[in-house]
Image (tube, rainbow over all chains, first blue to last red; front, side, top):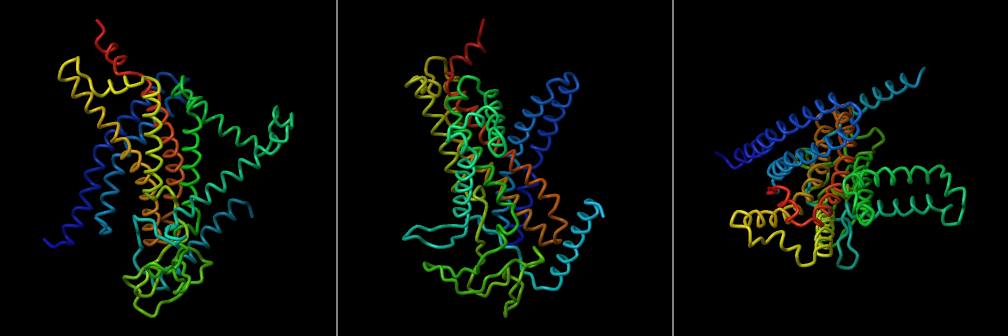
Length: 77
Length: 324
């Protein structure tokens, strides 16, 4: 396996695997938020704000993977 | 012709011209640099393009604040009771943000609003100004080294705008981004401040130090009792150690969350524009506007939440959990 091939595989795997967990996590988050809004439409604003905070935190983990993937792909690491 | 028709026609025009330029002019690979590119030196201090944009953001914030509060500083009573115009908008923004922060931490929002709001109102323009056309695409072919000589010609990236005056290089186009001559690198004049690890690390350290300062101020040396728990058994001891590590891991997390979101957004916009001009990057522009707002808000809100948590000792949580 050449160096370039290993680098490309590493970049692909880094973001591919990193997106699995947060994908499931965000799905669970939004599902919970939608159910909560359905049960109590008055608190939609509060629920939506907290949902976005949760999404931003979970998405951060995928972003960490994306950063590593970019660093590997553009030969910084 | 209605406004909607005019908008559609202009978008179609820009797309056609962009695509035509993309396929007629030589285009290299998009150049992505994690490190902010240097522009010039003041004495021994290097000024990078992200530093330049951060200075512009600071100038913008100061000027906006001065204009918005000019009537108040003159002692105008009606402006105090019935704000208008820019003053009204700024008051709305600050008040909305303050109400949200009060929701996060009712007890300490007032005391730390200065820090938290500064973080928010610094990061938000930093994120958004990185999306302005021209930022990241207009720059100079920089001959590396100690002297920033404006040797090579001023170039703009091909296919990004139809008002560009591109310079064709004598050497081959592939492999050199923006058709810069060999031996030089393309340095944009401006780059988003949050896409520079230095700014995000500095903000993360400010957030960390504020939290730790408040913990020690509120609980004295008992704050360390949150991390070094000796009298509740071995499991609680390791819980304390893990909490200590997570305090420091927050610095890394803050830094890379903001940097990753904004830098990856820049790279995505760049790569999309190089793949298919104009049209492909439009949806991502919308996403980046949203992400910029959310990330600024999350940074500030998490700082507020951690400050709130730093004021409570570990014992409070423990008594709730182990209540008999």
